[in-house]
Length: 109
Image 1 (cartoon, rainbow, N blue to C red):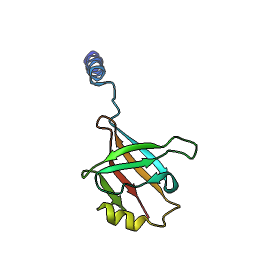
Image 2 (image 1 turned 30 degrees about the vertical axis):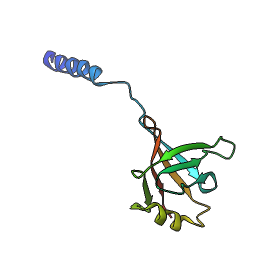
Image 3 (image 1 turned 90 degrees about the horizontal axis):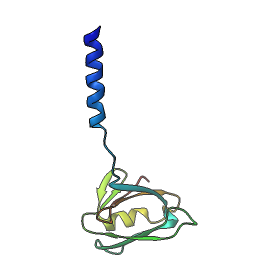
Image 4 (image 1 turned 135 degrees about the horizontal axis):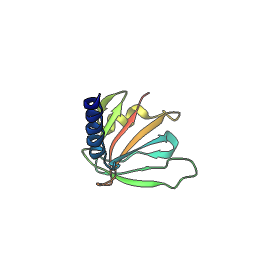
């Protein structure tokens, strides 16, 4: 019985050292289509606001930004062509905080 208690104490002590402060690297925003302005080119800016009363945010996109349509990566132009008229959809915008750029825009039509 003492060995089981000792093992439990050791595992408990090890678990404390394994806990660390989590750092948010990327934030994901759910954005309604009416609150999203897509970039004109691969290198540019994307504008969005999280709610109708929220302030607009303008964040850089680049050639590494992924545009995901129904789970598949597509080009920016394909993405914009497919989402035209998707005014009732909600998009997921992934913002990498350290680089302050959009890493992905996703939607399921």
